Each structure stands twice: as C-alpha cells, then as structure tokens.
Length: 277
Image 1 (cartoon, rainbow, N blue to C red):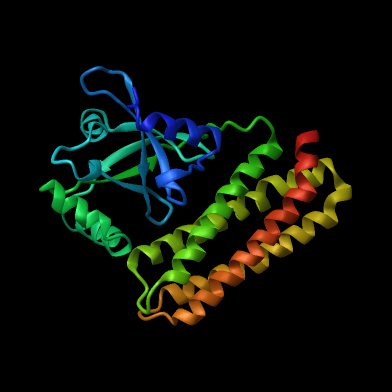
Image 2 (tube, rainbow, N blue to C red; image 1 turned 90 degrees about the vertical axis):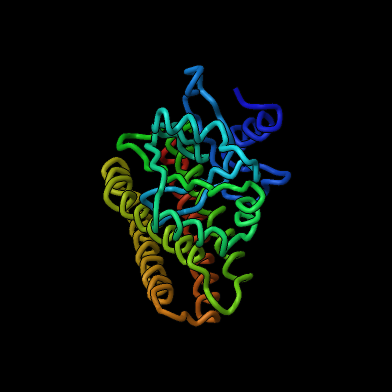
C-alpha cells in the first residue's frame, strides 16, 4: 500500500494522466508497482525517471537520501517484474539493476542534469542503485475509452515532453549535457515511431473507411515528412562533439512549433472520425 505522502500524488497522477502539481510539478514522473518481497502485495510509488533512448527507462533508488534502499528496490530484487504507469499507458516491465560502467555512466548523466542526485548519494552513505525498466512486449493498457481519446492522450504526452525539452535546452549552458542529449534523442525516437505507426496503420484504415478524407490524410502525411526532416536535423546537431548551442535552441523551437501545430491539426481532423468509427 502507498504511504500517506505518496497517496495524493498517485491519485492526482492517475486522475490527470501523469500530470501532478506541488513538488513534482514539471517533473518526469511514473508510477511503479512492485510485488512486496515479504507480503506478496502490490506496492505503488511515484518515481522520477530518466529517458534512456527509448528502449528503456531509468529510475534511481535514492529514497530521498535515506541510508537504506527503498522498499520498491528490495521488491525488484526478489521479483524483477513490475507494472509501470506513464500517464498514457500501463505496461509490464522487467527490471535490471545496472552495474559497473553502465551504472556509473547513467548516474553521472543524472548528476550532470540534476546535482541533487549526488547530494542524495552523499547523504545516504551508499551507492545509489540505478534500475533500468524495459517494457515486456505486448499491447499496453490505457484509460482511454475511445480511439480519439487514445490519440489525444498520446499527443498530450508528446506536448509535455516537448515543453520539458524546450525548457531544458533553453536553460542549458554552453556545453550540452549527456542526459539532455539522451532526452532529445529519446523524443526523436518516440515521435518517429508514432508517425510510422500512423502512416502504416491508422491513415490507411481511415482512407479505406472514409475515401473522402484522402486529401486530409495526404496533408497530415506531408506534415510528417516535414517533421521527419526536422528530427534528422536535430539528431545531426546532437551527434556533433560540440554542438552549436544557438543552432540547437533554434532547431528545438522550430521542431516544437511544427509538432504542436501538426498535433492540433490531426486532432481537429481525425478525432471526430475515429470516435464515430
């Protein structure tokens, strides 16, 4: 069972599809449900997370600087399968505790972006474990009750991440941090994958059932191509040893504007059609 501090955060997270206020406002947050090592009962906690390129998500067992590992970490050692809620989807994931250079590199990225992690480690007197969560293949669950509602949830998740990336890039110093690079590349991978799924699945289905919407679908596909070009440009900048910060800021703002306009256009054109179907 969640403790008294976590309960309102969990309830707000679920009610607002991952958006919370207070001390966690604007943070990348997920809910992790593990199986109690001693009780066998589900145990849910809100955790800050680090993007890790799209294949996995990282969480750090800081316990707020406590000298003891948190309960969820002990639970994962006993049963390394957990349920993850990201505000849009709920899915099962395997948990792997990073070791050696892999752990150290991930933790160094976290500290570079937020020195608070290093403070927690110093206060705790222990090496903070870094855990990678990898989704188990299979369809995720969602609270959306209509296809249009599902599209809106996915789009809103991208809007939140775009706003975070834009703020992080704008506030970054002259040297681009490693974690910020990973955040940007994870966003690029997510947008690319979403658009490929739409181009190959949703759009052909709409055209089959509503041939009259073919011109609208073509417009949306053309927007996908524009965004794909912006993603390519952004990734090229990110892979440079010393990226031009001004160019990076400009490219992120350009991408954000194009994507947000596209999301608005797609929702206006397709949500009524998807819900009617």
